[in-house]
Length: 466
Ligand code: GCO
Image 1 (cartoon, rainbow, N blue to C red):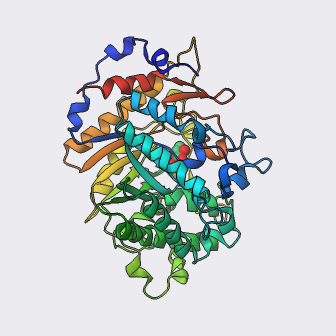
Image 2 (cartoon, rainbow, N blue to C red):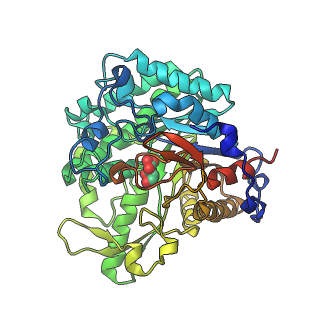
Image 3 (tube, rainbow, N blue to C red):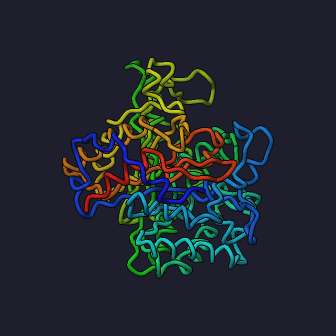
C-alpha cells in the first residue's frame, strides 16, 4: 500500500473549478460522512469465531454472483480498518456510517456471544473516536445469520425476538460510545430482492413469504428502535429507506396503475407504518393480503418516534405494466428509453440529480416526519488507474450535481441534516460482485492497495473550509 502522503499530495486542476456552492452553504451543523456495510467490506468471513450469514452462503454458491466472486475477503476491512478509517479522515469527513455483522457478534444469531467479534467493533469505534469521527451504526445491512435463515429467517415471526436480542447485545456493548443508531438499511430492497425477485440472499421467489417478511421487518424496525431507546442514553435513533421518484411510462391507465404499485414497493411500504400511517395497501389487492400476518396489537407496534430518517437515492424509475402473471410492474430501463450512455452509471441507472430533490420534497411532506439525513448517494463508473491516479471526473460531476439538488431542498426549508456518500471504497456490490466501483477510494482486489480517486480528493478539498 502507498503511504497516505503519496496518495494525497497531487494538486488537482479541477479543484480550482468552482462549484457555485461551498460547504458553508449547508450550514455549520450539517454532517458529512461516508456509508459502508459489513458484508461488503469486512471479509474475514470465517475468522475469529464469526458464524456464517445468508450472504456467505449465497455468494459461495456457483453461478449466483455475476462475476463469480464472493465476499469472503472483500476489502479486508477486518484487518485494514485502521488505515481505511485514516483515509476517510484524510478526506475531511465527520461521520463513518458502518453496519455490525450480526453473525460476527452472535454466530448463531441468538444465544452465545462471540467476544472476538464484539472486540472488533470496539476497535473500529475507538479508532473513529480517536480520529474525531462520529461512528454511526446500522444494525442490519442484509446479512442475516444463516442459523436464523435455517429457522425461516424473516418469514418467521420469531425474528422480532431474535432481532431484539441482537440489538440489546449491540447496544449494551457500544451504547456508551456510540450515540447515532440506524435500525435497518433499505428494508424495501432486502425484502423485495430477497423474497420476490430472488436475486439477493436468501434468493426466494415467494410472494407469501415476502408479505410475512415485510410485516416482520416492519415490526423489527420499530421494536428494535424501542430496545435502543431503553438501552442507550441520549441516543439519536433513525432507520434508512431507499427512495426513487417513480412515474408511469405514459398516462395509459395500466401503466399508471403499475407505477402506483412500484411506488408502494420502492417508497412507501416501510416509512408509512413507521410514521403511524399503517401499510399503504389501497389499490393493490396483493399487498392488502399482508393482513394475514398481522396479529392483534401489532398495528400500534409498527410506529416509532424516530429522531431522524435516512433517505438513500441513486436514480429514478419509469414503470410500465407487465403482462407476465405475478409480475405487477416492470421498470423501463434507461437503455430502453433512450437515456444516453453518458447519463447512465455502471449499474445501468440513469443519472438524474433532480430525483434527490424530488424524494426529499416528498418525504419531507409527510406529517410528523423527523429530520432527514441523506444516508446514501453515489454512483458506479468504470474507473481506470493511470500512473497511480484515478481521474473519475464523471463521479466528481455526479456529486456536484446531486449536492446542488440537496442544497436546493435545504434552502427551500426542508430539514436536511447531513449527506453520506455511498461509499468509502470500492467493495462487493452484492449480486454484481466487484465490477461496479462505487468508492471514493479505489481498491485493487488482488493486492488490497488503496488509491484515493479524484472524487475523494474533491471531497477533501470541498470539506476543508474551516
Ligand atoms: C443499498 C445498499 C448498498 C449498495 C448501494 C449500491 O442500499 O442498496 O446500502 O449496499 O451497495 O446502494 O447499490
